[in-house]
Amino acid sequence: MALRFDLPDRIPLFPLPDAVLMPRARLPLHIFEPRYLQMLEDVLKTDHRLIGMIQPEGEGLSAIGCAGRVVAFSETDDGRLMISLGAVSRFRLIELQEGFAPYLQARVDWSSFARDTGGPETDPGLDRGGLFDLLDRFMQMRALSTDWDAAAKAEDELLINSLSMMLPFGQGDKQALLESPTLSDRRELLVGLIEFALHGGENEERLQ
Image (cartoon, rainbow, N blue to C red):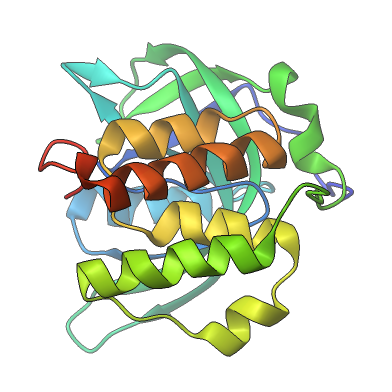
């Protein structure tokens, strides 16, 4: 993916627990708090239109997040904005920066995640039949549903990243999935988390 803009050193942050944006995925968001409505207004004036999604961690923030470009937005009758973020790259949080804006802004480093701005990753070790069997059992156990036809047609990266974002894992597990260096690493962790749940290892701290 060739970027039409330079990655900035400073971006606004949207801390949101249990929500991660994976490379080359999309994340829909409802924006209604005044500070984030202001953030969106400011972001749309920039060339990059980037918002940094990051999870809270303890009293602070996780070390790694993922920035998404605003690729669509619409306004509801009650004044909320519905936006879609298209992932551009993960980033490492360097430091929060003071400013006059009501939302968080930070200096970030992109250098560890060059693969995020390249072409889609593939996973030669992906066993779709085995993954779908595990996923079916997990879905039944959690009383969840999925679009199996869409899942069967999805490319490796879209399938693994979508599952990593949507399945109800705990905050720490989602962060570990985000930080996985390669798609194969993420798939191995994803399978491990599903197997852990199926073998009775789930609890309210890990699966919410």
